[in-house]
Length: 133
Image (cartoon, rainbow, N blue to C red; front, side):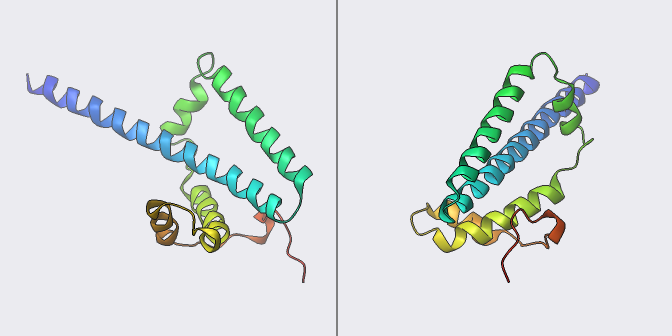
């Protein structure tokens, strides 16, 4: 009986962990695309913003189409084959640096989240746009 209870609790906890990780990683991916698109729009790079939007849409649709036929990549991500923590921290840093100064029209929750992001160093090789000096 105790094995059944422990097994059920482990199953529920595993489902919670898996769902939380998938939700977190997919939302950081969305934040990556949104930050890139908005940066390009503000800089007047309409063609680049459209290209990023097209790529993001295409990748999202490909994932949605193939997720039932090829669930292994999702399972590998969930079970830790790909640790997204460092990448998510970089995405969050970029989003904070871009959106916090223009966050006046955002909800209090969004502003609080942006403010709470602990910024990390982004290697120059991973910067999407080189700043003019």
